[in-house]
Image 1: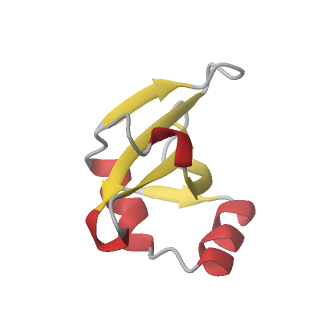
Image 2: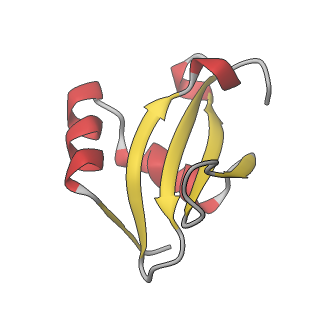
Length: 83
């Protein structure tokens, strides 16, 4: 899958030491996809990361552009027990 990262997304990955492989897995095979409530062009993708104690990675992506554009990446505590 081809996608690009915004400057913000690249900075967050570096600061939080989130491997790009986890983002790739979330982009390709999310356990859950939800529309962003504030922006119809943004989709939120969620995936549990077993290597990180099952925490849920949330990737916000603009899926209306080609290639898709990752806007932000973080571990979503609110989703931990929902997947």
